[in-house]
Length: 400
Ligand SMILES: Nc1nc2c(ncn2[C@@H]2O[C@H](COP(=O)(O)OP(=O)(O)OP(=O)(O)O)[C@@H](O)[C@H]2O)c(=O)[nH]1
Ligand SMILES: [Mg+2]
Image (cartoon, rainbow, N blue to C red; front, top):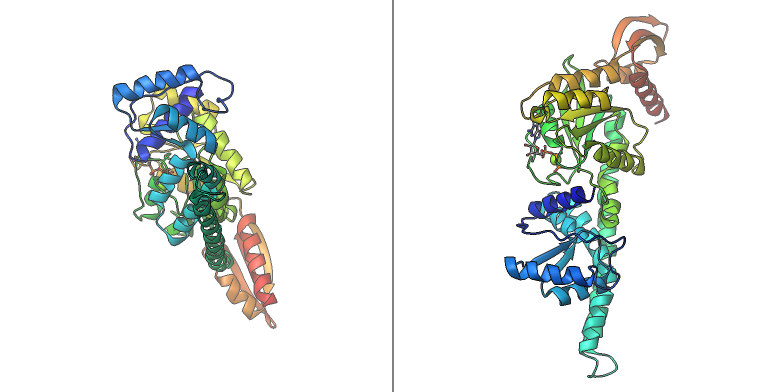
């Protein structure tokens, strides 16, 4: 587990554009409260830094302001923690206005308590000048500015979220089902969504290539329309500042009809990562939504590995986005979940309700229509899922 987390940290560093030379592992139950590393490891790290000409150290745990300061002083190079590294990646990858605002907010929330440490350091240097050192003044301005900016960002994000809520409601009242692709970062979600929706997405061998949830149109083999959304990848121990911010972008997920949970079949840590995804889904209120589990990247697996996976994840669809292998397997499973097990139903509708019903004609199978005085009697086949949407849409229209 330890080496795996370290491996992931290296991947994150690589994604942020750093070249990783060395890792220093310390076997302590807790990081040293003052310097993060114990004395022996500090000396060891210093030797590494000199030998390899290292210019940046990244720590696996979040550092307190004083730990960061002390460690920087001891090592003589710039030190950042995993949270800062992830924030850096998010800042670089955010493309939409909302994404950019969310990252800025998360980063200010991270910095705010740390401005105190910074201020203390500055006021110490200015301690001889007067009761209020120049550092302290700077600190107050910094902190006030940061707080102002945070409240302005929150307002702007709220506005954007309202707009998104309106378009989501519009979409919900239409008959087209929404399927969200979710999963650990770098498993191939965007690759699969672009296979299905034939729209090009950002696909990179980097963590968090996708930060913004966007909805695209797709079609099932039987001709039914579908909306698919590609989402930000999950990661263990996502800094809470970011989790808070990205909960709103993940709102889409909560309103999906089906979740396609994607795993990387070639990843030995697949089970741990699946638990992280499962936990995150529950945290964002999407734990109850029906799932299809997809094992992607099977082109990288041996037959033994595939047999083993079949045992551990018996109901999964095995695919390779890279080789366009078995994409139809996902589509068939979506069709079965959405439209399978159809039952015969009868409704008597007013003309207005009937025109609303007709918006669902791609998702149901109409058997007969007959007129009975003012009403239209319609007999049709549909799944429970679609029927529920249909009825609530008709009722909602009726209330307007
Ligand atoms: N070998 C192999 N590589 C794949 C497959 N699918 C995706 N990849 C590669 O995996 C990497 C990540 O793919 P993405 O589609 O960006 O993954 P993602 O889950 O959207 O990643 P994030 O948005 O960063 O969370 C890219 O280098 C892809 O080319 C596959 O089936 N086989
Ligand atoms: Mg992606």
